Image 1 (tube, one colour):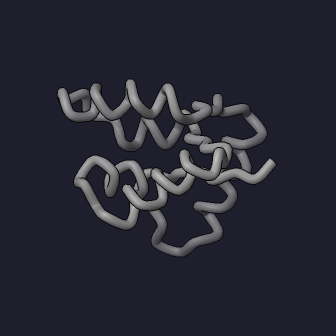
Image 2: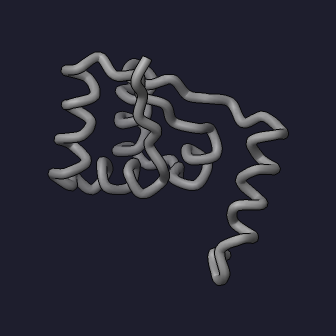
Length: 87
């Protein structure tokens, strides 16, 4: 099955009403492509405002919120370490 994973930038863009993200989100729904959002992405994005609460409800219906396993967390840490100035 084909899939798309949204990162924090995609959620921020969706929240801000960016046309390209909205088009991608609509294409994912229209084509029945699996949409995945890692829990860590939600953590980076979430600030708890009303707009975010509304978006998260919609996201929860349209996406698989993927739990963060230890091996994925370690791989992410290694990837960040490999990018100079990432954090």
